[in-house]
Image (cartoon, rainbow, N blue to C red; front, top):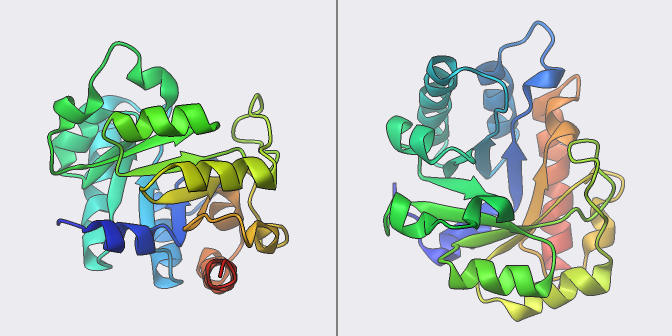
Length: 219
């Protein structure tokens, strides 16, 4: 599935990043479907501890799910799994770029998302062929304990520096999301604000409405 830049920009609105640590008795596919039903506009599979076969099987399931809901699907960090499952693309961190040309590895047609936390790293990501940038952490986050929070002016500077879509990530909740209004971001990437909730579908519905208001308020 190919996405234009405008479609990708719109897909940043509510960007869901999976986290199996909150699942309990539920299956990841079940929760992923719930957040997509609730209005998530992008799906990233993030796995740190699964073996390759289990990771690939899960990626194939989630790719099919994302296609059913017509949203982009990327795999975090693993170019191999992204290619093997037929994902729309891959999301990588700054450390994954060292000594690699990720764009040439995945080809011209797959989505490339790159993490950044400064204007310089955002510009470098754009130059490396990124289709979008994930910027953060915008608030304190339990997912990455060493991540420092960005101020609103810093976030605004990153958004102004690049031409590609920008999604904010890191500690975003329904309570603090509205404070990102005016930053210039195209949407929010969330983990526990979806997958740690007792009703992920309702959480997605609430966050999407808030994100829509935030983006509309950029003026």
